[in-house]
Image 1: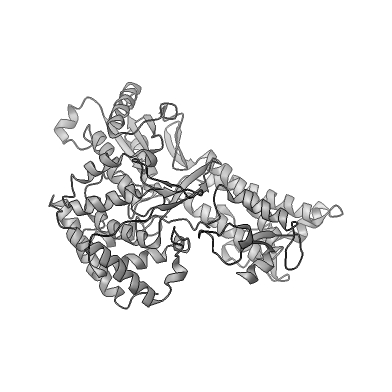
Image 2: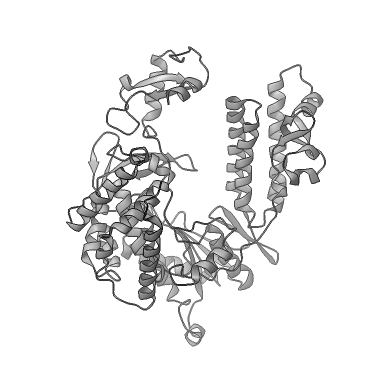
Length: 565
């Protein structure tokens, strides 16, 4: 649901952002930008952007989510509230709700969930600060910037290794980067461009708001930008741009003559807090590692000496889920071994879950296909042909072994194959019909049409075109960027997706869930079944005070849970 004035608000915002972008390129002053934050037009656009995010279903400390702001009247009340507080300078953000989400390595990542109102103000800050800094950022930083992606970063590295023969690599790893950014240093960096102290104070309020753990204790650290905040990635980029410019001044930003007399040739590619520095010699790489360590120390950050490796391109290295390596004379980008292992584990687990949940139904195949297709679309922009072929074999044999187990002891291998693996010529997906053989699937119309698992090899391999790094906030550049990056996985906005995290999703939820299941005898309290059990919140929604009390929790099966919700 949009505000009636949404289209006019967008036109106004685009004009404001273009003016800010032009002034940034021309090195103009930014001493009155707080006045833009007082506009109701900006508040309305920010509210619409925030509520579009899936994470808007997740409440902050006040328990308010998108469900509470469905009507235009409620949204208009929020517009008036935010505008009044910003104009009177009485706005103060609420501490974020700290929860934890699993990382790829099995550990937990702390995530701060702001309230909807605080997300709106953060989005307003992002909409104003991003056009200013987009013209100041280093052209080869790619994380959380509009129309840029991991593929552009990998393509830049391929260009440096394959075309210009930069053979030595410093794989940078900053210890707990987002948690260690010093608030004073960040404000000092902001003041280089932003001369409006009202904006600096507003950013300071967000940094010092703190977070609330599950035990209810409020923590107010003097370091770190809370992961999960809309403006946090932009602030981290502003801070780490100091590192980008430090390295770029050594060679990249020099003119043609001064490059000739430069003692070392070095380039940097950064994506958020992950960065790679490439050099011509091992000696230069070791020298750069030492200089980067000293520079980060001045910023209050620490380079991990254990994880920061110096590597030759012939040995290869992993970056952003890709492996970049030179084979004889050719430099190739491929999916990393870690990414392939994760795909295999995820597919096997997903296959178990969807068969248990849906049985042999069309939605089971569709769910698996969306996962396979999504992974393939991400990695089709690099040299993935051999990897796709190997994973197709893995998908086929994993599905076959699962089908054989489900058919029981009396089933024969040949009988299971003919029953569960159907002819490709009868597939409902036209590209499948070009191939012979059979694939795991389900009949849509018996012996006429079949829904089959997708094949990664049927996804054509393409390559990322050269990215000029145009500024999307300058007139005419947006259309060019949309055309050049329309098929590449990237975001048209730098606003991070706040994960849709349930309020019960925290470090202590597993123990609570097990206690409730044991209390209810591991069976549904409505129908008595012992299959597909979950724990349901009766009255208070997850994330609100008292929601995790035993009196508010009950064991239900999947079917009864759906009715209760």
